[in-house]
Length: 314
Image: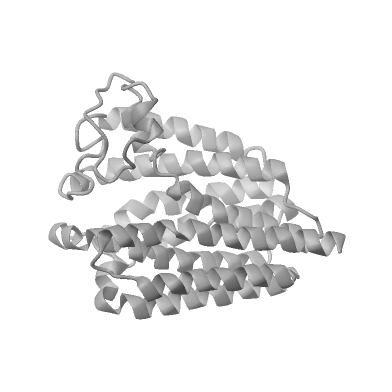
């Protein structure tokens, strides 16, 4: 499986990362398939899980979220993000070969064969399954239910201008999982959190997609970046505005207090500052603004945790 050769880092990968400086050469292409040098992906997958877990803790009157569940969600986010990226690269190998930013990825560049990538994907998915099996039966079934969305996502850019919506369905699934892990069921609060996560994902991935809009137009890849075009800023006002409103509704229904809403207010300022400074023709800036959404995730999580502590001890 690991009979590979390292032909250098991927063009859009982080330079001089530990993947390139510490791992044996034969393992580097697999690490790049899983995007280990780019943690932003698993950050964005993990935050909805932790928000949901913290929101459920607020509703249950617990001072802090369940630490063991939080650790499991971190491991699961890393494993499933890696499996998802590997699957995406297998499906998109012909498209990636035609796009400047992606043609040096392990599969189109010949560092890894499709068969090797499939084996690696299965191993990562098995790690995610082991994590999932640590939760209650309802949460296990709920987690398994997301796989159809994950499987469909790479094909959406070929058939709809809204692949970011399907990405949101997949990446925000954790907004249901944390609540389910605590209560063994769902209610309207986590559903609103999930819906807010979907429109947030459409927003940040629209910014990300502006990096590739010229190449995407040439190869026929569709996206909300191409759909919104020069009206991206106006679209983001609607998307990020809906994010804040839906999250506020989830907080109200869960009985969260002032500190949770303070975190949401600070997070809202962060989101709308992205809109204020956005230059859709500056690919480097689009990437940095996309990455900054992890800060938004952290702000919301801290607000929810502090709110739980305050409600319990004050």
